Image (cartoon, rainbow, N blue to C red; front, top):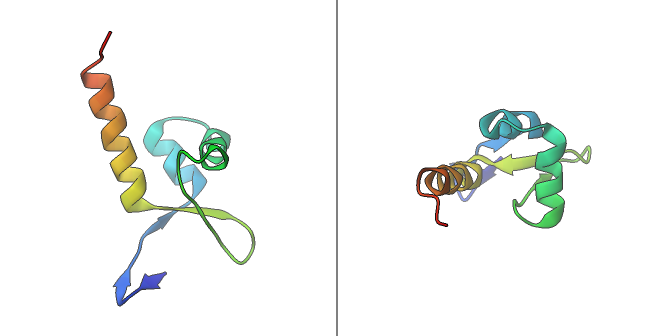
Length: 69
């Protein structure tokens, strides 16, 4: 998918799930809950922006390294 002359990498639920080490259904639940935005393909499948996923993954790993409480 291209936006304003730049290509945007989109990930499948399975690819996102492997990055977070969770089930793909968990990724879908996150999208439904608004924790992660998704794009729908013409066939109705969800795709996720790689940049957003990487940012969320970075935030999650920082939280795991510096637990508070």
